[in-house]
Amino acid sequence: MKRLDVDNLGERLTRRLAGRLSRRSALARLGALLVAAPAFPLLPVQRARAADAAQSKPKGTDFSRAAQTHDDKACNYWRYCGIDGNLCSCCGGSMHSCPPGSQPSPTSWIGSCINPDDDRAYLIAYRDCCGAKECNHCSCLNTDHAMPIYRPQANNHVIWCFGTQSFEYHCSMAVLVGLAQ
Amino acid sequence: MKRIAHEAAKAAASVGALLIAAALGATVWSTARAAGAAAPPVLQSETAGVTPFAGLTPHELTYSTMDGLTGGGIRIIDGDTAKLVASVYSSQYANFAWAPDHRTLYVSETYWTLGNRGTREDVLSIYGGPTLSNEGEITLPGRLISDPKTHTFALSSDGRYGYDYSFQPAPAVTVIDLHSRKVAASVEIPGCGLVFPFGERGFASLCADGSLAVADVDAQGKYTVRRTKRFFDVMHDPVMDESVADGRSGLAFFVTYDGWVHPVQLADTPRFEKAWSLEQAAGMSAATSRGGQITWRPGGQVPFAYQRSRHRLFALMHEGPPWSFEKPGSEIWVLDARSHRLLHRWDVPESAYLVAVTADAHPLLFALSQSWLWVMDPDSGAVLRATQILTPGLVRVRGE
Image (cartoon, rainbow over the protein chains, first blue to last red):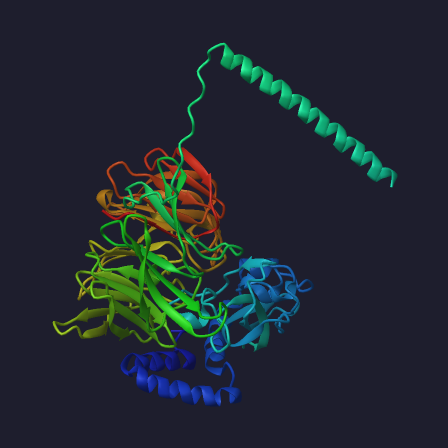
C-alpha cells in the first residue's frame, strides 16, 4: 500500500496513456517537452526517482556503506553508486564538466545515492560526455538502483549521447541534482 | 667522437665475422653435394587467397568484442581446439545473429559518414558465401545504441524475418524481411523494450510496468500489440535484460535480480507458469532485495544459457548483496528447468561474465571472463581448453 503514492499513480497514468497513444502524438508531446525542457529540467524523472530513493534510504546499500566523500577519482566515491563507464574526473573533466574535446549530452538517466557525511539521499544525473574516443581511465561499474534497459530512464547501459553531434562515448559525469526527499 | 670510433670498429669486426661464417657455410654445402646427399626440393610458389568458411559448426562459439582500444568486431572460436577460426568487421555496440543455414551472419550496427559524426546510418549488414564476405546491407530506420544486449536483435526461427529493437527516440521494433531485404514494419511498443520472437512472425517485449507486450501480425502484415498481465515487481525485483529465450519453442525464462525464474510460453496468448527460485533449487532460502542480504545471486553480462534438448538452465552465480546483478559468477549452476532442481555447481577458473552452451548431442559449455575463454564439459565441470580473448560483448552458438 505504501507504493500507492502520487508519483506511482502518475507513473501508471502516464504508462497507460503511453500504451494507447501513437508515436505521432507522443512525438508532438515530446516536442512540447523539449521546448519547455529548460524550464523544468529532469523534473518528471526526478520526482519518480525521489519516490524510489525515499523508500530505499533507511537501510542504504552495500555500496553506500563503503562509500567515501573525498576522492572523486575512485569508483567508491559516493555519487558513483550507479555509474557505468569512465569517470570524467580521470579524463580531464570533473563530476559536472566534460573534458575538453568532448561535449555533454543534454540527456541523462537519474539515480539516487546516499552521502555518508550527512546520510541523505541525493538525486544524481549520470550524464555522458560524447564526441571523443572512449577515455579508458577509471572504468567503474556500480549498479545501485540501476534498472533494466526496458526501463531506460534508470538504465546505465544506454549510451546517453542523444542530442549531441556525436554518439561516440567518452566518459560519464555524476551531476548533483538535489535532495531525493 | 671516441664513442663513434669504437662503434665503427665493432661494426667492422662483425662484418668480418659474417664473411668468414658465410665462406665456411658455402664450403660445407659444396662438400655435402659432392658426397651425393639429396638436395631439398624447391619450395612451391603460392597464390594468396581466403580460407573457405563452410558454416558455423556445432562446437563453434561466436562472440562480439567490446574492447575499448580495438572497438567492435565479431570472432569465431572453435570449441574443439580453442583456436580462432574467423573474424567479421562490425561497428562498436553491434549485435548479430546467424541464419538457420549457419552460413549467413546478420550484423545490426551503426556508422557515421565522418567516423564519430556526420550522417548516421543504421544498417543490417549481411555476411556469407564461401568466405564469409560482405553481401550488402539493409538500411534500418534507427536502432538502440547501448552496451551489448542479447535481445536487441533476433531472427524468426525460420530465418525469414529479423527483429531489431529501436529507441530512436520512441521504443519500437523494426521487422525486416530478410528474403526481400527490406524493412517490413516498424512496430511501436510504448513503455517496453527488447525483442523475443516466437512462432512464425510474432514477438514479445518486456515492459516497464512488469508486463509483456505481445505483437502478432495479420495476413496483410499489420501488427497488433497487446499487453499481458503484470507478472513481476519491476521496482523491487525486476526481470533481467539478459533473460534467456528459446526462439524455436517459444519458451522463455525471465529471471529476476533475486533469482526468481518466470517460465513463460510465448504465444499470442502467453502462458505464465509458476515462478521458481534458483536459490531454493539449491536448498537455500530465496534471495531478497531487502535488508542487504548476502547470498548467492545470478549476475554477469550474459548470465544464462539454456540447453533445450535436456531442459537445462546454466546460470552464472556469485555471493553478493542486492543490486549486484552485474557481478561476474564464480560458479556455474546447472539446473533442471522442469523439476526446478540444482544438478551441479561448477567452479570457473576466474569469475565469468558470459556463459553459453552448444545445442548438439555432445555439448560444450563456454565460460568467458574479460580476457579468457574456458571450454568446459557441462556434465563434469572439467575445463577442457582455454584461450585468451578480447573483452567479450555478446555470445552466440549454433541453434539446432
